[in-house]
Image 1: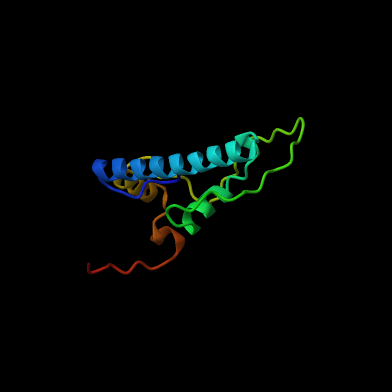
Image 2: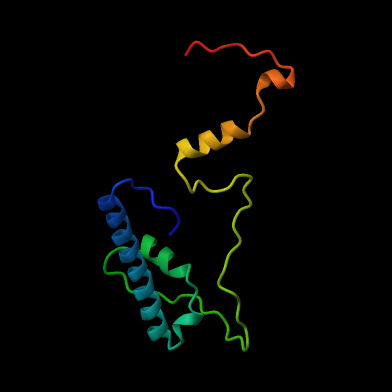
Length: 120
């Protein structure tokens, strides 16, 4: 689902409803495919459901989807690594973070760099 892109409460709600509808459609396709092929839904490849939804036209019967082989004692952790980022998340107001950053910086005069005043 990721990060919400909307700035208003109504926009976030709309985005969440759209996500819920899409997720329910995918789950319904998975359930239908599992019942049609007499296999547990967990063995149906998830990626086939969105592909079928985007490529089929209304009224098209559900075609056979790929069924993963039954694997005993195969349990994978449901987690993912995050992309390593150089900087931390913004968890406080930007003005507060700016003040903190300015307090940490060494003045340019102490570094031997001549400071030129800005005119803006």
